[in-house]
Length: 258
Image (cartoon, rainbow, N blue to C red; front, side, top):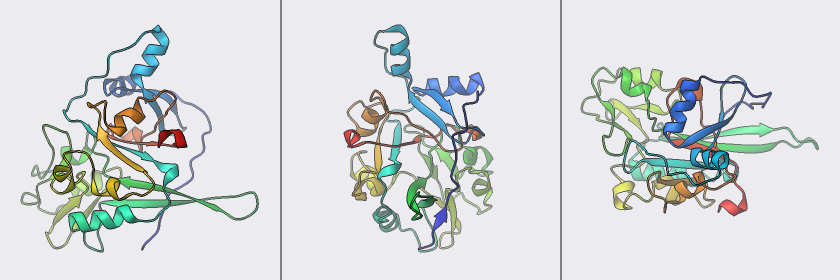
């Protein structure tokens, strides 16, 4: 299995970002609590929690543009790199050996005693609210589902130009030789998602450590909704400077979040 690396990012201070970007996240029920220098990672928390703290009274849940509005919370520090999620994804979605719909990145962390520790970061299509891939596709082969907002591929329309691959800030697409078209994660929309009644993807169901928490941001009963709206929990997204408004959120969880 080829190993992918990601660079250590240091929190060297907080910098401001455009108020328009803040308003966008507020629109989707999340408030910005911190920005790492360079804009590479945002620290987010529930907008309702922030507003309630300011005015000392309950706030109505945020309105989301899709119903259901699917999301995934990645509890990054729980990942043990067992790769069961990758195997489940390949089997469920007929992913070839050279392809991928999800990956696990690895980071080596220096240790005081000389033995480096390892941290793992699962990555997948971020199912963006403002997807660059949809904007640049010349044939409409990649598009957002009008009901749930999942970014989907119509391989019959795909001409294999790979423009969407170049536009994606998350390197979340690959060219599937057998179909001569682009393939990517679609939250198992046509495989596991319908079978599970919208409750789970193949990767989230297979994870033994509870790293990938799938859910619906419009349903307060789903685990992902509960995590995002738990007081004290903070989240970040990948590549916020790209302006894609991801629906995949990362957090460092505790045992209380299991």
